[in-house]
Image (cartoon, rainbow, N blue to C red; front, side, top):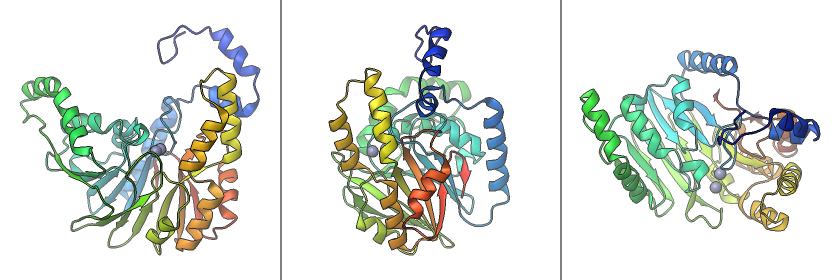
Length: 338
Ligand SMILES: [Zn+2]
Ligand SMILES: [Zn+2]
């Protein structure tokens, strides 16, 4: 059989390897592609929830952390819908498919935002624009994010010019041109339209600079996002009084376990270097509970989960966050409507 990268894999060998490892590891190594029936069912649920929606809705499109393909949790992306207008935050791999599954028309996307330039947050921005354009995305959309977002977008569209032009000729469409990009060299006010006011804060995610957290204030609901960061007082402040805080979260013990497994499988990384990076860049889930409590939010959504293993139950995530947070805790899953 072929694996996703086209390598020949002996089925017997693979099954033997999976059988030989403990449950947690098996879950990590099993092909995590959801089966078609599950995806269809989720699609039905998300569409029904959005159809009956009153007020602002948040859909988690991707809830896994890091640039890891082939998992049941896609890389990070979110969409918020208010009054028939959609606002997309982050563009990890899979965002275009996941967005399409919600049934939200591409033509309703008003503005798009990026927290920071790591591939699990920006790698599918270009494809989203081009496939979106074919599906009705408007040339008038506005993009907001850290520099060099303008240059990245220009370079991508330039590289895709020949394919855009073929499609434009085929379908008698106006070719997709450069979109309106607003680079954010500083945190603060981001944008304001008749649906939403958006602000950003600087978060700590070295060596990525700047990396932002965002707050979206809709008339009926405020939704804050930590972005990728260590636990920060400033995130609690930004999220103060918000209805929903979507915060990244990692389970330290499981991260240690997972990295040891990867090293044992030949991943060329040192345990100490990797753990140092995780501690300098991400938020243990217990601390996330502390921040949500301090912010006084109604609902904490754990997303960008590290490690993104289906073997860690929702209850395990929730229990750790609940040590300090007394409000409602939602463990993020792809295509969840909140
Ligand atoms: Zn990330
Ligand atoms: Zn990151």
